[in-house]
Length: 170
Image (cartoon, rainbow, N blue to C red; front, side):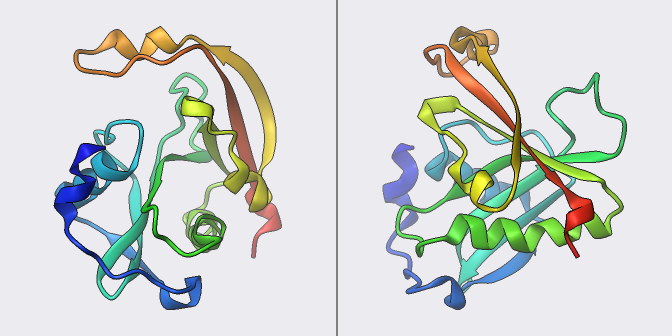
């Protein structure tokens, strides 16, 4: 996350009322944002990417993709594969942003949206706050992240799978 300083001074929003949601299409600026503001590396691809912007400056991004478990991927579920936000974002940016992305997933014809938490002590509070149900908790081996060159290693952690039942969203 050392490149945070290279982004320059960006305007801070006072509240989520100052933010707008945009559909992001260019991968390079999103990858740079994730490298600056997320513990994990960028993802190789996505189904969709959304930005929360203030005065054309990214404040947060949500990347939507196929579920983590490709074996269980039956086409009815999408997953938040990355959620990254600047430290100076307004309070409640995460829950505000997720609640605006969920209707898009439902309109695309998916039954559920999922997300995983646990890396670096991330419980998943933002997912819980937006009505996701914690459906699975298991212990993940932190050394599994070293399966590729230049990946970080983590202590073992509790990995939680959060699921939104989209039939409850209008």
